[in-house]
Picture 1 (cartoon, one colour):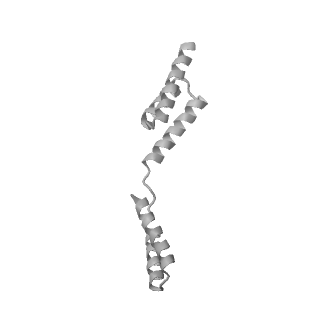
Picture 2 (cartoon, rainbow, N blue to C red):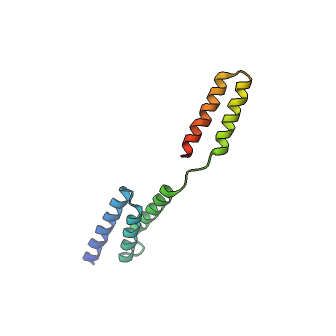
Picture 3 (cartoon, one colour):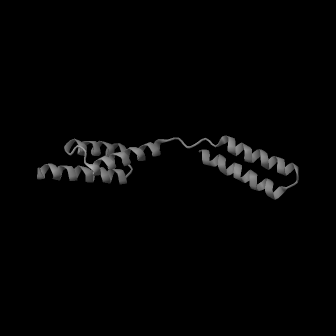
Length: 103
């Protein structure tokens, strides 16, 4: 039993290091291996959940805010036509900044 616990602790340590290094697939594999040794262990289960969430967040596409950027640009153009140049510039800059967030 002590060897099994030592092996488990070693694998969990590897998993934690992989998660910290953003090697999510390695962390997931290690946490699954740890759970095979100690099924239902709360630390390994929580680590597996954290690693899966981190991987999903890292691979998720950024939100599409194209419509919001266009709204700012259109508002800026309308304000410019009204000769409200300061407000027009603020809106246009917000739209341009939003476009760069898409990349």
